[in-house]
Length: 203
Image (cartoon, rainbow, N blue to C red):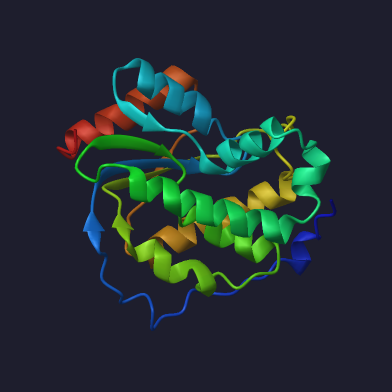
């Protein structure tokens, strides 16, 4: 598994002709996202403890499913282009199974895959049309924490920095107004998100 240098990542902008595509399904879903190792899953778990429905990160789900088949992490990650295509397909399938009218907090939205396409040399516009199937109610992007590796995560700090930058750009290009969540303690982040949603009458 070899990651390119950040200077080699694609910086392909989203096709402006496609950005006028209307969304097909309005949802009551709230996306919690951010760079790898930004505390997303910790926050999602705290939200679940408050009694809200949540959906785990599809990429981690997919990789863990592959590991359960007896593959090693090196087997799963040996072809990162194929892996990211499979994750995007899996992510889309997961979202299409979720009830649109339920209030659900998602650990990443499908548009997160756009920056991963760039990192691995794929044109994000190949995925763009699928990002108009669901319209999310809100987007929260967590400010970065110090990057930490784990047994599943293959990204490095430069990937995380690149991903954070393009998350903001892509969600804004899609017409969303992402809310940045400060780099504070997990409980403070939880309060911040729930108070913002309450102030906006979204929960």
